[in-house]
Amino acid sequence: MAVEEPVYSVSHKVGACEIRDYPARVAAEVTVTGEREPAINAGFRILAGYIFGGNVSKQKIAMTAPVVQSRQSEKIAMTAPVIQESTAMGWVIRFMMPKAYTLETLPTPTDARVHLVALPETRFAVIRFSGLTQEGDLIRQTKLLEDYMQARQAQVLGPAGLARYDPPWTLWFLRRNELMIPIS
Image (cartoon, rainbow, N blue to C red):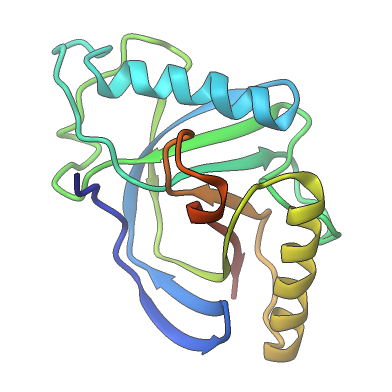
């Protein structure tokens, strides 16, 4: 089953690390409090409710990949591990909407926790990896990505996002994950 993924262009690549440019896009997102894993599960369920008809027109919206989790917070310094966008308010879980939609054409969510947002063009430093996303794995991947960004003299513009592309039943060694950090 093919799942739509965001388009991007790669301007530089070394091993699993690359610089990507993403065009403007639209997302549905929710902020959830708690520990990282339970938060992504809770956020996923809320957003799945929206795309499976939990909206005023009861319209179903195709699932896309990846699901992105970041820690929501005020501006914070880049430190390891920077795994998700961080804020004292919790975790931001985000589904990218299919490219056929705009903010104006998406149905209004019936759950007030779901917010539709326009995301501007963004440049990211990205590291792609397979396997699990346990804390130790994320620390290692963050370090590799930080080294890559430092060598490229990339300026961090915001918190990192953890992008997951596969359903939870995918075998751990086949899972596709990405750590994405917005840069200048």
